[in-house]
Image (cartoon, rainbow, N blue to C red; front, side):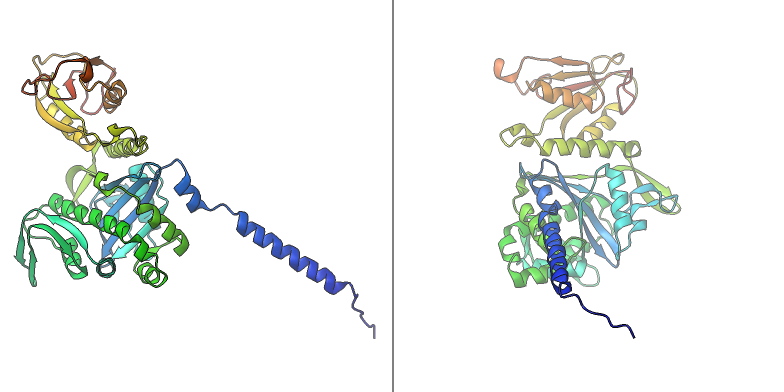
Length: 400
């Protein structure tokens, strides 16, 4: 029988291999790019999806857009009854049809496609977990404009004014729906709560980073990121200037499909994508540029014979965050070309205003700081912009 001998150099060779492999692994882990750190330090808007669900269906879905260098954020409210051509099932249906509480990647992808942006992170919170988190952070402050007193399987009672909601009250406030309450009022109420919730998480961030508290907090969330990355992300959210956060709902036209009312986004979704794009640009304005916080006023005049054109256009510009203070008819109804009259004194802002409808026909009045005080009782001078709609405007864009 042949005998095998162990070379005395084999253990040393094995040790060298182990050390070499271990060194490579350590180097890979050490030098591996930290995508979360790069995201928070980079020059791009961070988009995060929050879904608050009940009975395995979304009650509300929000995309929080945050730009760390300026501490500015915005929220996009995505209603569950949005009507879309759902590619995965190849039919028109509600966007939340594809929602799976165990794996929300399909829902996540549909929202990305709707808004035309990438969403890096997502968090799912069911209603019971929402109550536990609210108790953990010792309540959420919300302003309730009018008293709520109804009987629906028990009393729903909220006094008007500023309220601190505990977990149980937060669950009721977020989920109740009165028979005569419009979907718009329900959305506004939930948006108001979500903003208070995000603000309170920021206020209690140091407390939530306590090791034991962090473990409890994480157990109430469903997310695909690690606890270390979650802590970093919420550390960044704690810097959001919540008083400057704007909320934009995805709006559209209501139509009945297969016995259910669906909201189809305006202009096949191109409008909300343009709103999101401009919102992203606004978030990145330098902190010293106070125009990022200013709301510009608009007067819209119909210079055509098309009835209701100015009113429909007003809805369009409100969606972009402008304050439409006046809608009416122009002095003539046969304007050939749409015209933007700028009184703001900011040419770049005026051109951005015109770009919303692809209008390049602008007239610049004397800037504010170079003229006498404005008489705000004058119909002509009370807005930053006057938009006169002409025959070249098709309801969404100026055409050549």
